[in-house]
Length: 359
Image (cartoon, rainbow, N blue to C red; front, side, top):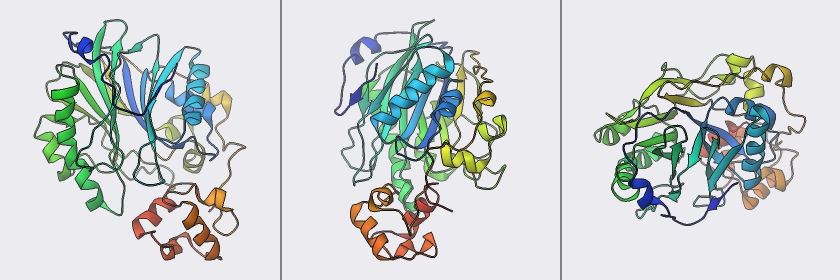
């Protein structure tokens, strides 16, 4: 069963806050930016399901449609031969470009405890307000809050810092008003290394990143390179949650997938995960049988050939800018898109790194 929340919902908070103590959950939790999930961009959902099903609870960013979430849900069930559930926010954003957040969970291990809420951002700092929900470990009946965030990429670090610094207010809001006395976990794509000084205001509250081996979480076009450490899991220092293991699942290395195929048909990010109370990742050998190649549906967007209906799928490119792209043909390089009204250098960089353009 799935749900889409378009307004704040506080149903179940009071009941959840009465549950105590919150200790020893034994599930694996992961965060994964699955690039533009739900667009017609050639996603290999069978492989997505195989990778995602090694976890018990999965927080996903860049969900672009209900259809995409439903497809991933079906793929998780097919890959694991188990029942999964999911919930997602409404599409969030200030412009025509909007994204949703979603949570997917294995029903034999995890249950929804309600409390789904999109942050009420009175200061309008966040371009995509974070989304959170309560989950209960079925074995122990212990509950925790999981919060999902995708920080604005913008034109550079200076555009990201206001949202990064506002995370401290968000964290306190969760603890004071939304989930009092419930352990909280903050996950997502922060578009900033966790050691950046911008996280100081959050860390002053005792919130720490769950470090893994220190390497990056974004997939380069160069084989074996993961250049940016952008995806993180933050926990309260001294939290009742018992983290016994953690890691970064670099699926291209683990399953022998080329970086080009990963970026084109899976994602340009890899999952980051933690294990609670000695839980372990599920083993899954079926990827070898599926054959991890670019999906037969895969089509790239050609600046010189594609119609408006394809061009307006690019980040920051709506119908009017797509028409400008057509009028500006021929394009010798995507970097020249800076000539289009409203496409800054940072936005053009995001378009070029989206994996949607033809090489």
